[in-house]
Length: 226
Image (tube, rainbow, N blue to C red; front, side, top):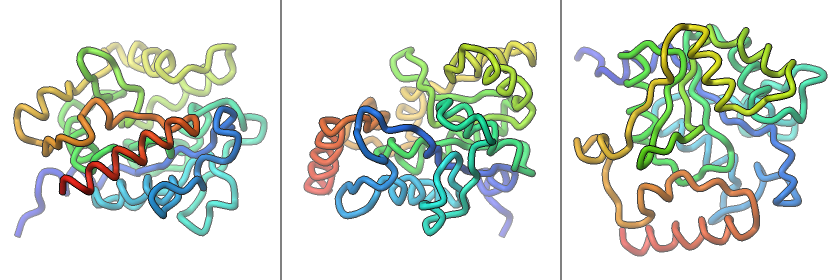
């Protein structure tokens, strides 16, 4: 049997969970916070493994090495946000692209990861993101390894915001950031539509205890529906 389109595209993508944040608003390491009996890092790794990927952890501490291989931030770049983890991951990767999912987004469906990888393989754009109701979502993201020098320059500047760095990388390649409208994926039936949580809620970032409570209630509701 010949491999599917997704399986073919999947062969040249390395997957990473971004886990190097300071978790200042949460007050403790988000990666190890429990959500429905599993840590957030386990949820994130499970999403990527469910998509047939073999993820590593980027920007995490050695304490996370029992969950997956860890690529630490470069010396002097720790605490600079997710961009430092993305740069280290890309520079340690032999694949042409990296798929990045933050540790604090446990509601992202596996199908969305698969669609984004397929999209990136077809367009071959430097930066590939999802949009919801016209709003760009920073993550999940598929990024070509060629963006690494631009990210390094961004880290050395005073503006290390990911979206701005993504735009700079696209500009450097003389192209636009490639967006996949979530609505088009839902209309085409490429991702199963679930009443709970609503698709816009898939992108919830767990930054505070209140966010954690929201995620807990959404997962409880989803389990009750299913």
